[in-house]
Image (tube, rainbow, N blue to C red; front, side):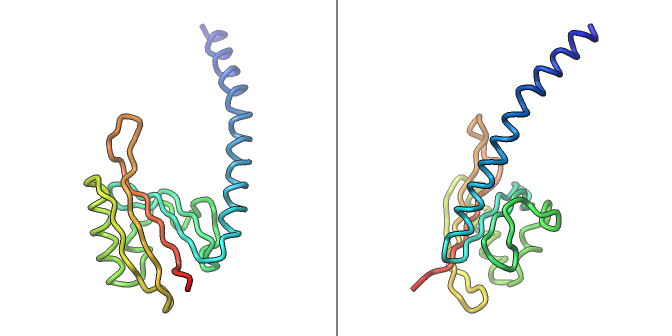
Length: 139
């Protein structure tokens, strides 16, 4: 029995090794694309209870592609630093959890940003969170 379990574990490791490398290559490609975008762009994956699960940004304030430990599990309202933005984000997240997309305009450092929330569904079609993307309007 132990030998059978060990064989299954080895088989799984052989399968996951190349997949892990592929995921790393894809993340590097995404990072190079993301960082080359000329306007400021931030994207978040947010759980139903408004915790940041993943944060991507080309903003120099954040400068990350993976979820930095200081943001993982942070409540979205703690991440945003403006009361009006928090209100708008909470409403947009609630709409996304209800299955609807929404967007609003936010001022970030005296620049206009479009912020869009969309529902995220699991493989069964159940809504499990929202995706938020914010991009600086370029004139």
